[in-house]
Every structure is written in C-alpha cells, then in structure tokens.
Image 1 (tube, helix red, strand yellow):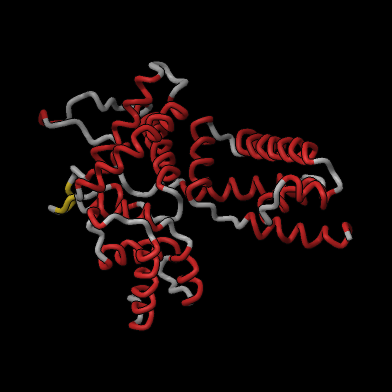
Image 2: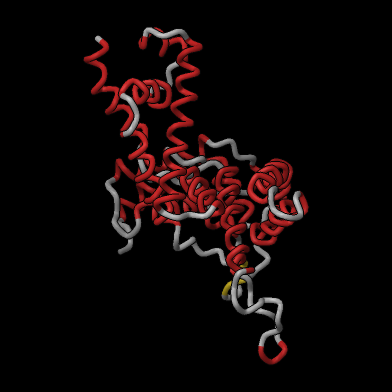
Length: 306
C-alpha cells in the first residue's frame, strides 16, 4: 500500500533535515530528491509493508548515517567526484577487511586483493537491469557505517564463492551452445536468503550468553555499553579499582563470545565461514536491542547497590 500524503510529507521533511546536517560536498551532486528516494528505500527496508507510526519512522531516519548514505547515492548516480572520494577513503579498508576474511586461505594476500577488487564493478554499476545501470550502492540503506556494510558484503561474497566452487557442475565448463558460462552466484545482489536466520541465531545465542552471566558482570556491561560510563565511573559505582573494571569487562566479553561461538558451532553446526557471516550481519544490522536489555539489567541491580 502506498504511503499517505501526510506520510509522504513527513518522509520528505525528515530526509531534508537529515541531508541538511550531513557533511556532503556540493560536488557530489546529491539533490534533496535523490536523497529522499534513498531514505524512503531505507524506511521500506526497515519496516516492510507495514507503515510505521510517524515518531518511529522519524526516529529511524534520525539514526541513519547520513553522509555515508549521501555518498552511496552519489556513487550510484555515477558522480565521478564521489567515486574518487570513495576509492581514496575505502580502498584501504576494503583490502584490510578482505585480508581478515580470506587471508588464511591458500594464496594469502592475492586472494584477499582479488576478493576486494571483485566488488568494484558491482559498486560502480557496470551491469544493467532492464536497460538501467544497477549499482550495489542501491542496497546500502545507511543503517550501519559504510565500512561495516562493505565488510559484510565481502564476507557474503567469500561464502558465495565457497558455495560456487562446491557445486557439482563446474562453472568453468562452457554452457550449452558454446555460450558463456552461467553467472557466478557472487554477482547476485539480492539479499542473502539466510540473513534473517543467521541474525535470529546470533540474537538467541547472545541472549542465552547474557543470561548465563553473573549479575555483577551484566551490570558492568550495562554501565559500559548502555550508559557509556568511563572505567573510573564504573569503578566508583562497583567499588572496584579502574584496572579491575577493565580486566573484568575483558573477561566478560571473552566469556560471552566463547558461549556464543560454542552455541553456533556445536548446536547450530555452523562452519567458520558461516560464523564470520553471522558476525558481519549482526554488526551491520543488529535486530536485538542489547542496550535496552542491559539497561533493564541495570534497573534490577540498582536497589542492591544502594
């Protein structure tokens, strides 16, 4: 169902306010109309067909990474200045991310560089759909930082390539009639159908891991991540030395990660590649409000501290 006139006006107003606060060079050529279209795609991706209440949609728009979203708009539109900015700022990050994902495979850095470079044609939009240039940037919705999104895309491409090489029919063989081989799955820009399943598994595993912690360990996490207190402030509240707070937080983080990975590996039988993909999806689009959960833990623990 298309949005109402009132809803459309609210989306337009929110998008213009967001663009006005973003650090967007005029040379990128991002018009309010172009940016509004990107914001509307993002809202539709977040809420689906169910039209959200005005306050929820506006709060969501306010949370978007506006400058990164504007950069994606400009690059998708083929603006050369924006593309040069993207290459200069994100090529090193792409290579670092690719090394982290594929660096341990045979071929080392060569595989990592090939993985990173394989994205450029998709990002720039050399492919056409129905006569229209299609850029991978159209799938960036501003919910995470650009670098985080790129890292997730690289992880997905890495898993796609593993799946492709394990197919029974080799893609190296010519297609019937002597035509080109079928297009590899790595060039499919549709959302990963496993994405929601992976996110749900991570959410459940983190919830279970948090519930298994001692109350004071959860409280430290709440102070640090939900309230964003310093180590010294937490130490005063917990009656602990600052260095003790630091050590205990690190120990708790490792314990949560150990429990989450054990659940995903042993209970869900995920491979290492699938596990990395779970983390990348969780970093890009976290469906579980961890902050609210930790704050509820803090509220329960406060009477005991007073």
